[in-house]
Structures are given as structure tokens and as C-alpha cells.
Length: 61
Image (cartoon, rainbow, N blue to C red; front, side):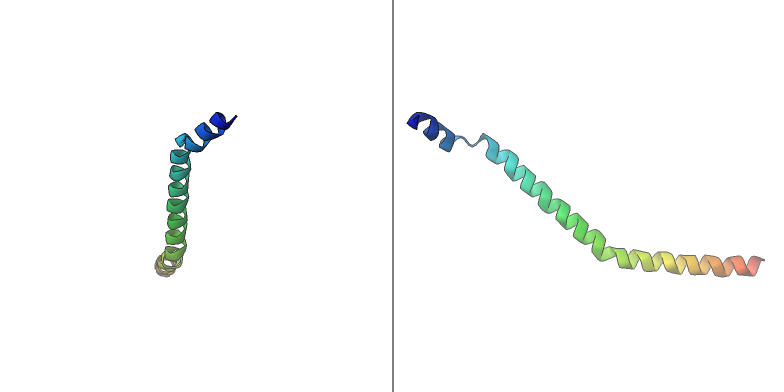
């Protein structure tokens, strides 16, 4: 039993998978934060374009 616990303590095969999972989680958090930060600016750009298109459509009628 002592040998089994010693082997279990030395086993590091799952550590790599956990590290990759943590890295993927941190990258996804960074992506979400970047999208949230740029969302307002992109929304403003589309609102400006929409206003200009509506103004141009009013001139055509």
C-alpha cells in the first residue's frame, strides 16, 4: 500500500493536461475582456454608419 501511494505521489501525467487547461482558460478570459472592451467602440462605429446611410436614403426619396 505504501508503494502504491508513493507511485501516485510521483505520477505527473495529469499535471500537463491541467496546465494546458489553465492556459486555455486564461486565454479565453483575455479574449472575452478584449471583446468587452472594444464592444462599445464598434457599436459607435456601426451607429455612425447607420446614421449616414439613413441620411443618404432620405436624400434619394
